[in-house]
Image (cartoon, rainbow, N blue to C red):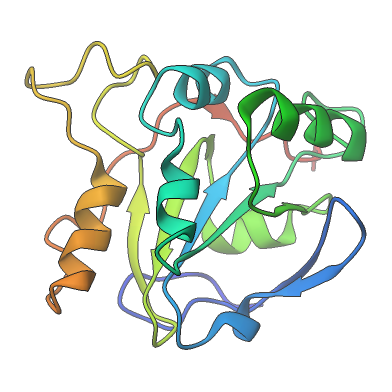
Length: 184
């Protein structure tokens, strides 16, 4: 698997969802896809999904035909690992989109996912057009935005794509918990 680069084809992958079904990125060609690195036990994920910018965001966009995939690259024995923890997280946060398990970390490393949450937007041609934070409020709650005004970077990227233009802010610095990869 190649490394993800902005402006290039996003690396294809195949991972299993929480029910064991295989999900392949390339099956969504022709649709915009959002990848959200997820750890149900990370305090930043909890804050973002209960009171912050991620609360209800995936549902808002999946209702508009955008594909939203959560990916947990946590290794066995690490925080947020496993089917049970992720099923509990989807219930706790009211998530209906697929959560995919990347126990080897291969997909996370290919995308250089460093934090939970860490978000990536892939356009309908399969090109990576955004990577970074969900917003500019590193508390995860949307209450302390840098510059004083909350900016949802994923909303902005998706609006730019919907308008037929280039993503104006293609990269930001993600914040949150470190992805719980296996030790090397």
